[in-house]
Length: 238
Length: 238
DNA sequence: TCAAAAGTGTTCTACATACACCCATGC
DNA sequence: GCATGGGTGTATGTAGAACACTTTTGA
Image (cartoon, rainbow over all chains, first blue to last red; front, top):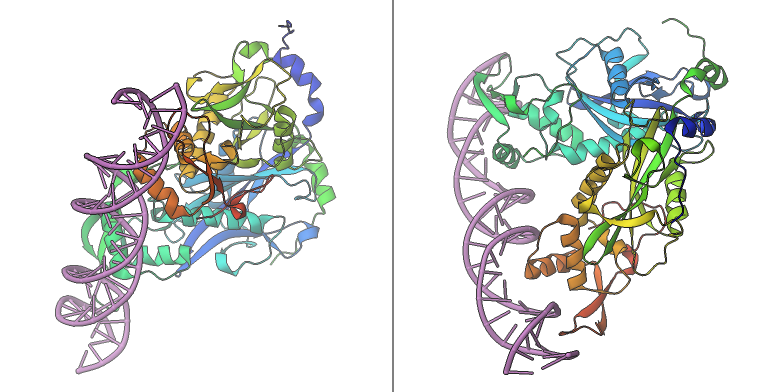
């Protein structure tokens, strides 16, 4: 066997400098739920090439920053929120996806309770847009949105993620409405409740809805042990 | 609403040049199946920092190259193969994951029929290693391997991917062996065959095994319409 | 005739689905 | 009293899991 001279990492670095001219960004699909609609936080593109089109919040990854941290920074900058569910979905790296140059982006999605948190919507070009009313977007952001939406749809009935879109207390009707808004289908009430009941995710608060123009429903919350904080991902909870 | 001056992409590029100093690479988890074991193609690390450890084949992404193309190039360079199943799994971007500098890597996995293709194993430091006999690897490659293995395990009984590890003709016993090797469990033969039969993936070739020291089994092939070529991903086939 | 693996069917359980009626509240 | 949604149970179909015996071939 031929004896090979080992390179040090420092030597390798100098020989590969030409590859350090691709930028990496993160883009965040921030989902919210409002008025029985699934929404996504979008911002008007400030590039002439995409004038008038909506884009996803994103930013370049800094040299001293983990990619998960970068996506969390974008989330915090735009919403002011902490302790939010965030999950990486896919990297998008077509050569011409960004007109500024070669930018590979890593897409994340997050679930946010719009109604109970005050967002930092300082920029009025930033707003919650109904997911199913976006057709064309800047860059490849429509593809990114669709990919994240699909991931969310796959996850929603299996894992207790959808609670991140709701206030701490909610009725089964609200929970069903969120699921329907995400999946874009109507669900049978009895079967839905049976399935939720089997999952054993909920704790009965022994409280009732108030100020509803009909018979009030019971209020529930997600069991404490299923609450997820910050960047931690959900895995394999049944 | 304040009127905003739009930037062109060219202007934006110049203001973001400092972010173009993170390198992007792809790493490939190339799975194979041999001697009733799931194997992965690994190569001795040539970095002093990881002397003696196995690493995954990978390379930097070129400026004029899609990331999917980059992973396919790595695959072809190492194996000489075309028309191989390849799927992106996850981006890994911890700040210190690579000692040469800031390198974000995008992990792919692929499934390869070892036995019927002649690999370009020109480098004798490159070899097929049993997946379950790797504990420590260079970089964060053990984490990457585990992540890809988990993805494969999730997919294997649902989607017709495992056939990429086998020759075109195979017996149900071989198919079951592959599944067991991937999942690390024993499966009941009758239930396995029932499940495969329900999937309706197979075409009976009306041929039998030969040169086996026992009663020969029937040979099957994957139905033509389920064959996948090149970089195309499999989606939602039942 | 023996060893080794091929081939095959029934029962039980769990879960998804389809479906209809009475109840509590606000107005 | 009426409109609105809350709350509940049964019957059916499908899929997965457990489980054992006979058959075919090569040696």
